[in-house]
Image 1: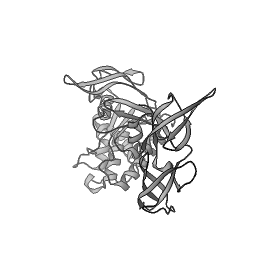
Image 2: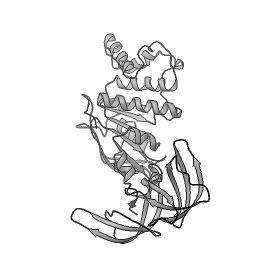
Image 3: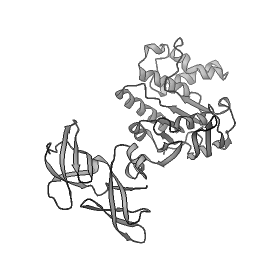
Image 4: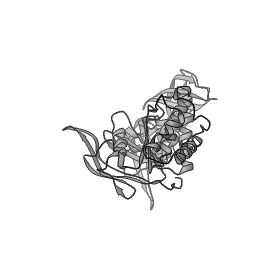
Length: 360
């Protein structure tokens, strides 16, 4: 995490619930802490509660119960106008009849700042997002990525304690999404901003975040760094939602307990491997393994599971295989030089740090 900027503040939810009407719970008893200067992404499927959580930080929705803190201030009952928060929307929300500089200046003018300061801060904001010299253009003279950067500049110049992003890249094509997410991450890092970022795109979340809060059914499923969530998902939902995962039935045959850890010997069909056991005991267990951590080897290689290539797809930078095995059908990503062909009998093995044991 980068060093927090001057105005950056933490965000804390203490047992926050949001109920619509009598019985629609959008956010259910959520507690979280975003540190000052940190970029945290709320990630999850549609309807999981991530956007409602973001809107409660902004003050656009009021919590039904619980407490929301921004820095040392309890903002639970404060309206949006009394919170030092700026929000960047999916739709950009630029005024089409105003020039770029007037769009960026709008919030500053509403705060009754002096004309000279407004002009200086607006131009500095455009410079930060790489749009110096674009001030006199109209929004329709800009690309989608440039319009989104104008929206970011408009939020930045207010120097908020917390900057919120609501699906900011969903209107952009794939190449622009990659560029703009890099721009956002660079700006956040350079300025030490506190950012809460909402997306349903797993790749986007992995690319921009210090930490990710995975939400499901109005609650938090897991919180961790991108690598922690990818390498050690705690349950099937997180394993399947963060990237792709093969989910298999296995059997813990034995546990080897030492002073600092417990190692499980696990069997999936006739393939055996050892992994940290966590809180698991002997018996049936679910195993997750990423497509890139499965090894396809020649048939009859010792300690492998028998398989047959159902499909082999050349994907430019890598090969993708669909392999049928006694444990189920596997999706495998392999080196582009892999030359196994459809219909070929193979052995299947797991990388040493590949399999993860999941909670029920």
